[in-house]
Amino acid sequence: MTTAAFPLLPFSAVRERLVAREETALLDVREEDPFAQEHPLWAANLPLSKIEIEAWRRIPRRDTLIVLYGAHDGTDLAPLAARTFAALGYTNVHLLEGGLEGWRAAGGELFGDVNVPSKSFGELVEHERHTPSLSAPEVKALVEGKANVVVLDARRFDEYQTMSIPSATSVPGAELVLRVRELAPDPATQVIVNCAGRTRSIIGTQSLVNAGIPNPVAALRNGTIGWKLAGQVLDHGAGRQAPAAVSDAHRAQAQVDARRVADKAGVRRIALDALQTLEAPGRTVYRFDVRTPEEYAAGHLPGFASAPGGQLVQETDHQVPVRGARIVLADDDGVRASMSASWLAQMGWEVYVPDTAPSASAFTETATPSPTYPPVAATVGEIAPKALAELLKQPGTAVLDVTTSANYVKRHIPGAWYVIRAQLAGAVDAVIPASQRYVLTCGSSLLARYAAADLRALLDARGQRDAEVLVLTGGNAAWFAAGFDAETGETRLATARTDRYRRPYEGTDAPAEAMQAYLDWEYGLVAQLGRDGTHHFKVI
Image (cartoon, rainbow, N blue to C red; front, side):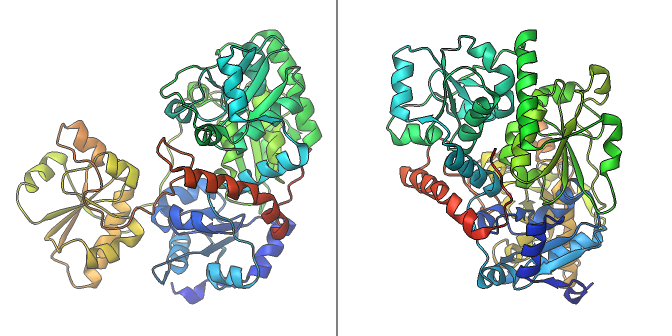
């Protein structure tokens, strides 16, 4: 299939669809780091490297209108991505006319960083509702002075463990309205909500304000970034979590509060047995269980994916890349679903929650459903870890690891090359020495199988049919489980580590300049929203 088989869609047509909220998947097929440098507001990142393992899950309807763009080192990746989508059964694939430069030239607004729809919405919430906040020194004084105060960290538990405000308790965003009364039963207790930067602090604080809890509530201004920029010390490895149990009285009050907020935001109600009516021709429906991952694994509604509510609101562009799609949220009492839905509705999504919270007997699926992946284009042989270990004792074998760069740096097979799958050709041409045998691996060898098929086709096209291409059975996980040696660090990078954008607020070693620049960028998002004009945000 040639590039000419895919129609071009100009900026004006894409913008018209976004303004009309017609279902559109605008996809940037570059790796995450270049995507984070600049992209349209409603572009979702789906790298060419990962289309086969992510597309069916993230874009479930095969006739979705898809618009692709993205280039690397002068190569337009969009036609390659279009052919991949077509091979996976997608029938309505387009290329963005002129790519990213065409968008810019037509006057389209471009945004930096990741999860921009959610972050810009958070800034708009604070701008319009004047969400209360306290500075890092003010919060530090309250904590150290043993004031009547609780600090609630609205991030994922693993983020909280990396670094947290002293005395803070982990309460991921969607859990706040449900659990705050257990942690602050005295209405005089000052409640502080924090995250790493601003968005989840603002949304968490405003959730409590919207729900009408009697306590004074404030966001920690600029989160852990603000704390560090103030020269204050963070905790590491903390483990405080909200009590698992919620009293009947507190749950009942939270249910009333959450439903009131959801109704005001325009959340729609639907009976569980009527969900199939949402799946009309031309409509995409995403179904999410917004409880904790542990609750989801213990039992959930059939067909629902796990997406804890706070993170869903924070990462809507990743979870729901089809703008204009319908979203259904569920939990076991209506609190987390209603509160999460209230934010999605304000962000312009058509969102539903069950009119009556499902009973325990409805959660018939357990664990996480196994995803379905498309077949690999070419048959490639496999090699067991033990056999590979023997081969590596002599020259002639090159190991190519297409895992994430973070996992590669953490540990990899000694001598293995780190390679981004979509950049295999350049890596084999310019960096990796010619070998009589190439062994592809990743964490489980799922992605490695597709990469191995790519490499086989590449070598055949170049007349190198004698070179052997294999996949490591079970991938790196099997290698390390067998007790073989590991190597760490950036020992052999055949491609740059552009697969992931390093957030200025993550980890413990971000420079102060980067953190301040990130805050300055967030402050400018409201103005960018005004210039863009496609957001449909409406803050209650």
